[in-house]
Amino acid sequence: MPIPEIVREVYAHFRDAYDHLGLLRGTFRLSFPRFLLFVFLCVIKTIILLQFFCTEVDISMCIVDPPFLRPPHLKGQNCRDEESCFFLDVRFKKKYADMMREFKVFVYPEGDPRTYFHTPKNLIRLYASEAYFFRNMEQSPLRTMNPNQAHVFFIPVSIQKMSEKGLSVDDMRNVVEKYIRRISLKYPYWNRTHGTDHFFVSCHQMALKVTQGVPDLVNRAIRVVCDPEYVDGYVKEKDLVLPHILLPFEHPAAGNDIKKRTRLVLLGDDDISEEIALWNGTESEFSMTNNHTVSLLRERTRDYRNIASRTLDYNTSKFCLCPGGSQMGAGRIADAIHYGCVPVVWPDQYELPFSSMMNWSAFSVQMKQDDYLAYDVLQFLEEITEAEYRNLQENTVKVRKYFQWNSPPIKYDAFHLTMYQLWQRLGLHASDSKFIIALTDF
Image 1 (cartoon, rainbow, N blue to C red):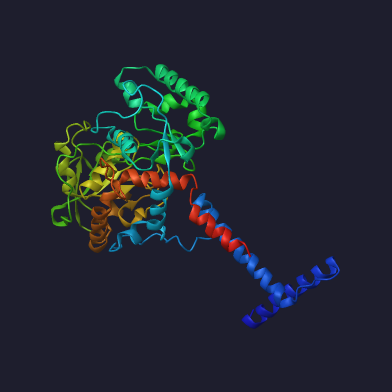
Image 2: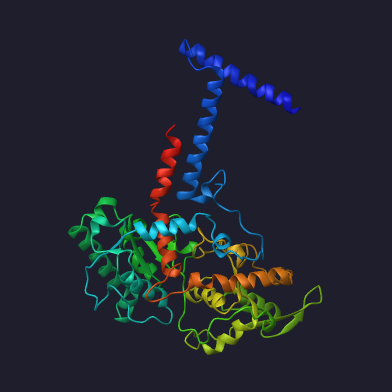
């Protein structure tokens, strides 16, 4: 149908609707042009509300992409402007400043810090991220000593410290249950929201078993975890990912040393790496269909305390497989970024750190759930051009600072971006709410 006829058809439908409204109400005092303007404003208002809902609640539920969310960057695009490239929201810097100015967290003082509560002592090894978070929370200006000023409440229960004391799973569960009961009786805040504005942090492998036995905690409070596989009860709409890091690093962070990276991929101790190893054999070379030589090297140890044995592997590999599936698998992403090895991730298997705010396609290779065949993975990686790889590797180096833990915490580091996600999860964007109210109040 020609465009003029379409316009006439639409005009006729609106005229019929206008006449129909007039018949229903007896008289319709709006002139027809004003009626059209009224319809147009209603459509604009609906779009604004949809954009707010999709951005603040769950982007995946969005029908129309909000104009302030950038589409994912093409694979291998160079990020010269880091904030505009790595962050999906063009207003990230402003919102971050709002969070630092407005957001307040209350840490429950209950519990003897010499037993199972508050800051773990060791900032190294498997649970370094958890220990850093506890310590950073004590150091942060976001913390308030007045619970009436708080937007969210931190439950400082440390499964790690319980494990160090030799408690069984049942004993740990009893400690957690008693703690929740104590704060719910002494303070009004848990009962006020049934715990939905409370959160707890744990990277320990026993945390899932312990907290599943306390349904009031795991079903209502926000879980901040290091190993966020969906099959383990991780709820994407409620819970958050803590960037998992295994410290100390044996060597300083790597730079743009592309010439030294002669190996295609570094494998790990996971199912996909085992399949590749069985398919081709370990520590060997072979030719792909395009006659390019590919080198494969598996990590030489499962013992992450023996750090020196894996540093060379990361520094000489272009890509590092990070399928997740364990604490070591989750920590491999941080290792890869630290040593400048482009991470290969499976985001439909587990939640990536900062996935709701960062453009992972700018500094990683994202595979789908079905991409588990050894040959498909290697073929896909080898087909990435040198120019694309160079940009990915440079972006991996640039994004490193967002995944680092510091004491005290610094601007845009892992602690602050975790708190930013928590702020997002609770929908505490006062500036956005005022913006929506102003635009919809016509």
